[in-house]
Length: 135
Image (cartoon, rainbow, N blue to C red; front, side, top):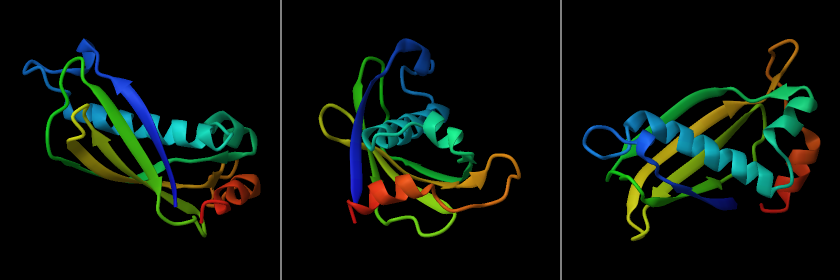
C-alpha cells in the first residue's frame, strides 16, 4: 500500500456564505493530494505527460461528514490500496481537520491514456516499478 499526506490551509475564497468550504472544492483537495503523492514518488503529472500518457478522471465519489471551515489546516491522506494492473488507477482519499476529525472520504478513478490517440494504455513502466516497492 502506498500512502501520503498533504496539508492545505483553507483560505477565505474557498468558503461559502456559511463560512464552510464549498462542496465543489473537495475535488480539488483530492487532486492536490494525488499530485503531491505522485511527487513523493519522484514524478509529476508533467513528467507522466512527457511520457505520452494523460490521466483523465473517469469517476469520483465523495462523502461529506463534517465541514472544513475558514483558516482550518486540513490534511489530505491519499492512498493506493492496490497496485494498478491495467489502464486504471484508484486513489482513496480522506480529509481530516486539525483535531483529527474525519471530514470527507472519497475515491477518484483515473485512466492511463495515450495522449495522441486517446486510447487506454498501461501505466508507465517507471512509475509502476516505483509503486511496486510499496506492495
